[in-house]
Amino acid sequence: MWPILLHLLPAALYASVGLYCWRVRLAGPAPGAQPPGLMRFERALLVFALCAHGAALHTAIFPGGEMRFGFSVALSLTVWLAICFYWVETLYTRLDGLRAIVLPVGALASLSPAFFPGNHVLSNDNIASPFFRVHFVIAMLAYSLFTLAALHAMLMAMATRQLHHARFSRALANLPPLLTMEALLFRLIGIAFVMLTLTLVTGAIFTENLFGTIFRFDHKTVFTTISWLLFSVLLAGRHFRGWRGRVALRWTLAGFITLMLAYIGSHFVIEVLLHR
Image 1 (cartoon, rainbow, N blue to C red):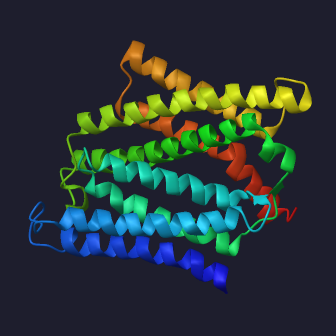
Image 2 (cartoon, rainbow, N blue to C red; image 1 turned 135 degrees about the horizontal axis):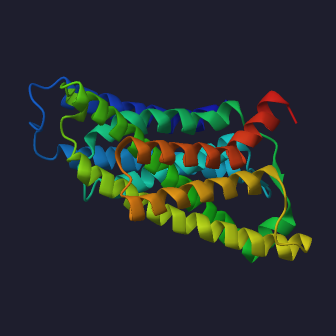
Image 3 (cartoon, one colour; image 1 turned 60 degrees about the horizontal axis):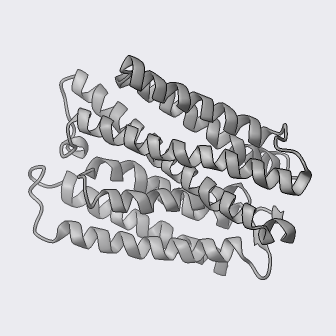
């Protein structure tokens, strides 16, 4: 019961922030007519939710003297880091509409380890290796940044569709111009791509030290490499061909889905569907 309550708290907090945002911004008389201090209160409430989520993650990853890292914990950690980046992003850019996507995802992801705890225990040799620690941190940063970029791309797709149909909902009324959002999207992808490149490099170093070979032909390495290639094409197309709009969004989501299949998707199949 205690683990469920521990994960239920951040999920409830994320849902509370989302409902509060919906009530004030969407049920209000007009977009942009918020009372003073509203954004500050929301940020404080979101920080509380992030702290609760982080505490629940620490308990799920380190239950005793071992380290467990199944698909649900990986998903929850990725989303937690993405929301942390989103919180920082809101200090500089107004992205109220993104909350409608980020907060429900945060609520579901923070609750998932309570129902799918997983039994994937990392060996002590892996945990003790400094190469593994560096690889782990960089990989999680890359995953989280690409998650935020994918959510950002979904928001842009919704905004573009409503704009083409000449109707804009209150949820998206306070968004910056699409060109500004597109520039922010590619800034996120650029930083995440550097992190993903470092993930492949540190992974190769770790693999060589542990197994004596630089490249292991397994699902994680293959899908991560494919994702890296997809984002390489996207960034090259943006630089040389000026890709934007739907083309850029499709490549972003394709690269993100492929990256999710590298670890989270494959472990979901192993742990949940195959019960291994």
